[in-house]
Length: 169
Image (cartoon, rainbow, N blue to C red; front, side, top):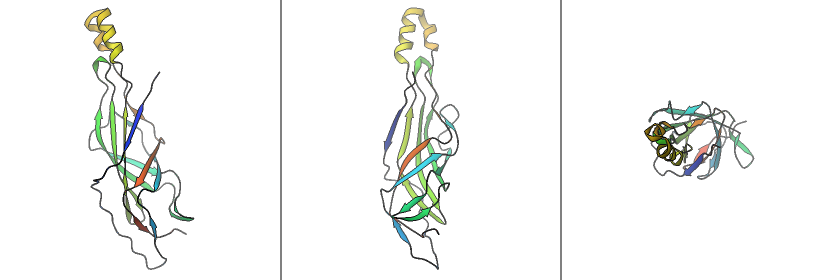
C-alpha cells in the first residue's frame, strides 16, 4: 500500500515581486493576506524527472472572490519552482519532491502566494534491510517509490500579502 505524506508550511521570503495594477475604471478591492487560494497542478510532476529550479505551472481551481466580488477567474495561471527533487534510491529510500509557490497572475498583478508542498515517497528501508539479511547484498537493489503528482491534483495556497485588485465584471 502506498502512503504519501504532505507537508505544508508557510514561507516568509519569496523572490517574486508584486506588480501594481492601474485601472481608470472601477474601485479596487483588497484580497487579504492569508486568504485561501485553491490551485491545481497544470502539469504532471515526478521526482524522477524534476530538477531543482524547474518551473511548476498551476491554475486557479475556482473563481477567487473578495466577499461576493470575483477578482480572478478559475483557470488563472500561477507559478512555482521545484526546490528539492530526489529520485527514489537504493535500499528502499523513497523519492522527494518539494515545490515553492510564488505568485498568481491576476490581470497585470502578481499576487504573491506562500506555502510549500512536499511529498515523500513510501520508504521501504525496513524491507530492504530484511532482504539483505535473508538474501545477502542483492536485497539492496529494492527501490523506494518515486513521487508522481498528476495533472489536476489540488493544492491549497495562501495569499502572502494584501493585494489591491480590480473586480471582474
